[in-house]
Image (cartoon, rainbow, N blue to C red; front, side):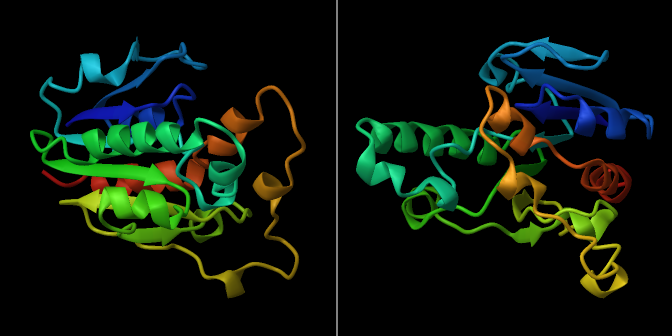
Length: 196
């Protein structure tokens, strides 16, 4: 399959699909952090091409429930939120791509009102082998929900950590917090990569 991993510079999801033999490429404004097929551009420049599946990771800064308070405290945030929601919708409604997943954290109600629906599914890294807590929403079109591989009871007490939530401020904090965990990327490639 031709797989577009939109708004990804880490290569984590791209490489999971490539490991299963798919023609996956990533696209981001930043260069790829790992060697592999990558378009360094605005994804809108290649979105019109023929893709079998797209997994998109648009920036969540203005859409996430964790940052909703800044809408009321920082000038310009409402307009930035509307622009971010419009970009999210552009990806979610790219109907020429038959199978789509747009990923984001839990959204605040203002973003949900614009987007028009909540996530199809929320997943956690610990469900796919990585001992971390990070609720991730998947807005799915013509893709089934990911089947969890583990239950919380499978983990020893205290094994699941809150590293993302507790991450200290740094210049690259947002980028680190947005990374897809390898277990989730593998599950996407395994469970969605066999569909035609």
